[in-house]
Length: 84
Image (tube, rainbow, N blue to C red; front, side, top):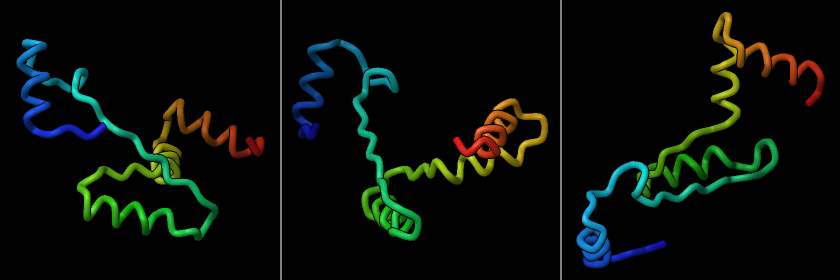
């Protein structure tokens, strides 16, 4: 959803509330593709040019697997071992 600054101000005035993390709309974009398709490259460009945050599921899972004693690391490793 794209809104002008005037529309945002109008919404703020009509609601009587300041925007917060729970009331401010946000957009999530999933970039999908096979290995080597350029997902990381495209996400880096989007992040650089549009200021979007880039969260890589693979990177996040690999980081969690490194944590000693993490219940999530154990779950991730068991799923990988089982081919799930």
